[in-house]
Image: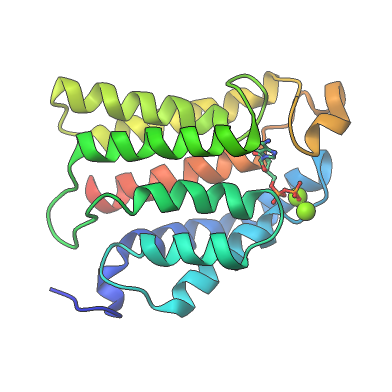
Length: 205
Ligand code: ADP
Ligand code: MG
Ligand code: MG
């Protein structure tokens, strides 16, 4: 079992970082269409800073929280930071699986924090449209005693993110683009979907 700083203890962070690295250019391109084009770099910068912190054996979630809250700019820095901060309430074990009910509660708390600060509702075409269904799916899967709660959450997040393409953004920079953003999925929502995909890959491979 890894001690603090053991890279094997930060599987969630490393899996998320791998996904973000691979999709950085696409996330940048989407934010160029509906925002200011920095989202790919904001997200990648955050995960790299988290990796540089070489955090404790908690999946790397604590390091993500600190990196995004303290060092990442843009709107996504503090909002992802608040989500990660709530997710630190969960034990993300190096072996075995996290408690799904606890994870669902933490995701719901993360959603509440994001909404309190950002003011976005479901349907406003933001990362809330991936996070809210993911938190709900995780809660339902936990209640049902599902074997694959994180896969359910990842699927719900991916669907929610894809569906933002049909929405007219009402929050953040994309709201300035308004109806011209229809057809473009929200990059922040895709970023949240990558996070839940990473959790599913680490704990339900
Ligand atoms: P910025 O506009 O500051 O450059 P980023 O590029 O870092 O922001 O992040 C953009 C993402 O932030 C969007 O794709 C969207 O998902 C999310 N976002 C923007 N405003 C809000 C808000 N008020 N509530 C929730 N999410 C938001
Ligand atoms: Mg941006
Ligand atoms: Mg910006």
